[in-house]
Length: 108
Image 1 (cartoon, rainbow, N blue to C red):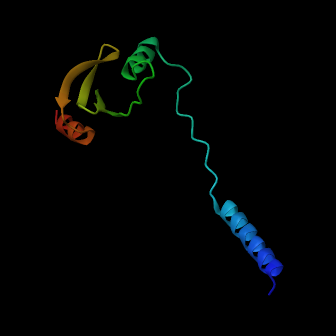
Image 2: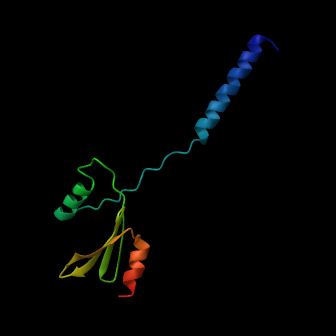
Image 3: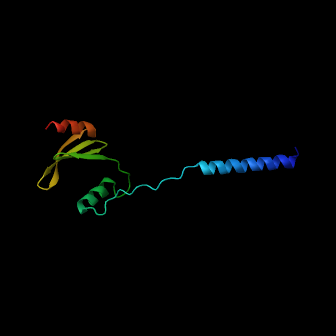
């Protein structure tokens, strides 16, 4: 095979490899929008302060069961009890995870 023949073969192989890799790359899905249509002012202010005016990302877990709402953050879980139309802080459980807090209050 001549040098030109090898170069053409190499070029064709490179082209095929590039097309194969490009075709095999999965397309990213558009993330689902989870933000509600409206947010009460107090919740908006809480979220603003929690993220330090957007300076840090915030990760938390939350759930509710019966008359209680549980909010887990890095330091622990805050437990709220439903009273007079809104949730009022009942306790803060330092270094506790959400599942543990829910189990602990399920007995009450």
